[in-house]
Length: 247
Image 1 (cartoon, rainbow, N blue to C red):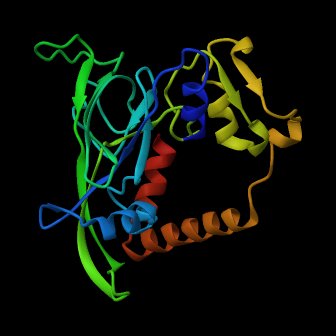
Image 2: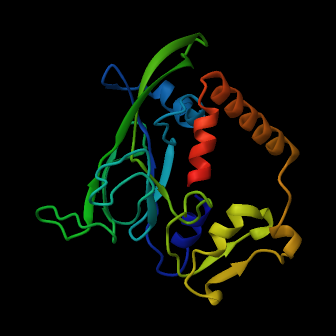
Image 3: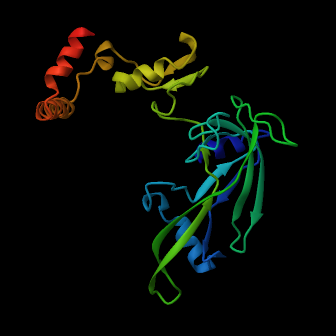
């Protein structure tokens, strides 16, 4: 949110649009007394799957990631796909918030071609998911309500985790390699040149070769023992050992 606001405030910067989630109860827009309660709540903690934020910053030209949807694996429009927002269709509600009805996003790596829009562009519509929460009415009474939450399944792509950038080629990155291990390798190997990586802090070889945590070593030993006992129990330990020797 802060990055989007900063860019919009630059000279001739793009107009910032804050898209609120559209919440409904029984297909009816939630009353005004409940609207702010829902938008201020941490709805992402109410569901592990499909949760989308109450507010999404957006502007024309903003880089975004597609979330929670695999629209087409063949066309490379899947969860985590990176795109650029080219158009946003919005609607004002009675509570003075702006809802996003749809966003036109360009996925440069995609071969998608829809009628009347350029190749690589795709219309992203709001995704809905349902959760139950307690809301306080005008009399102060808490009431359990089943809420349908509608929001664009996109998020700003100003930064991403090591896990999220696996397989991507990024020209320039700002990275912190002090975490070491595989995460540091993934970050350092994304740019195409040495000049493409800028380090937040200096690092040493010891930072990159940190020993495994004791808890992880214990878990690894536990899993190896479990594997051994399972193979012995089902009488396939010898055959597997023989197969490894042959390989």
